[in-house]
Length: 181
View 1 (cartoon, rainbow, N blue to C red):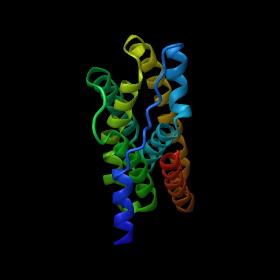
View 2 (view 1 turned 90 degrees about the vertical axis):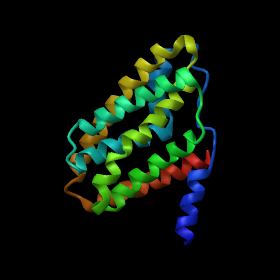
View 3 (view 1 turned 90 degrees about the horizontal axis):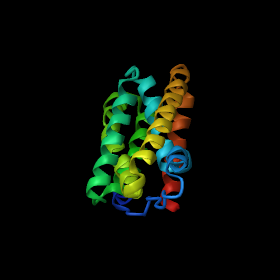
């Protein structure tokens, strides 16, 4: 019961994860954002790892990248959405759970593009209207590279179940840091 309550509280927390102010150098900001936004960094690496562990090849990373860009477009056009931050935290928790519960990896990995939609939505909200396309080009390019890096790491982790669990623990710790920040 305590674990369920703690999980529910994590999902309803509403910290502000947006990082506005991408006007001065939108391409540079777009390139750096996935690397400097811990929530985005962990989700992208975690999804890449899950793609390799579940044998999804590159279909899962590509679907994740497409969903993230689609979400960015939605955020750009419509602004913020209720629950966006909770879904971002949820993505870290689901990726961690997938690494910690190998019997559920395939199912949990398949929902990652849904969570990526909300990561992208946050990008679309935080990009200024005049800089959206340039900022998006930057964050999509680096996001793709991070998904590939995660995929490469996941291929190595397939042979090491103990390290998979350590990565899952790292994702949980990262989610806690994002919540604390």
